[in-house]
Length: 235
Image (tube, rainbow, N blue to C red; front, side, top):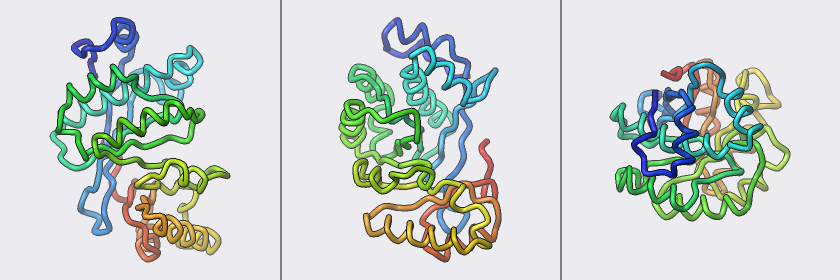
C-alpha cells in the first residue's frame, strides 16, 4: 500500500489521505514495434472497492481533491519504487489540481527526476474547471511535462477540447477501435481523426487494443502508440 504520512502536506490533507488504502498497477503504452515502452500508465487500485466507487464516494463527500493529491503523490512513489525510466502517465481530473503549496511539495519531493518525464492524462469527468486548468497548465508546462486527453471519441466536443487544452497526446477510446479491422465506419472515423490530430501536431494512442488484427490496422492508418490487453495487461 502507498503511504503518505511522511509528506510535508497539511494536517487536514494527511488525515484524509490516511483513510485511503490504495496501491497502483501500471500498464505500458508501446511504440509500433510492440516491444519499446513509450510510457507507463499508473492505474489506482483501492483495497476494498472499485476505482469508480472510490471516486463516487469522495465526489459525494466533496473530497475529490483528495483523490487528485493521492494520485499524483502515490503514482509517482510507485513509479520510482519500480525503477521505471520511461515516461509515466498519471490520470487527472479536469475539475481539480494540486494547490500551489501541494505542487511545491511535489516538485521538492521528487525533484528534477520528474522534469520532462510525466504525462498528465486529463479524464473525461466529472466537469471542467477553468481556474484549476489554468493553474494545472502553468505547473505542468513549467516542468516541461506533457498533457494527454483521454477518451477521445466518446464526447460531442472532442475537437473543441483539443483546441482548448492543446494536448501533446490524444487517446482514442476503445469504443472507436473495437473490431476496427471489420468495421468500415470505424475505419473511416479513425483515419479522419488520426489525420486531423496529426495536423494539429498531436500524437495518437490507440487505447484498448485487444487483437492482432486491430493492432495491424491501426498501425496501417498511422496511430503512434498502442495500449491494450493484446500487448500487455496492467500489472
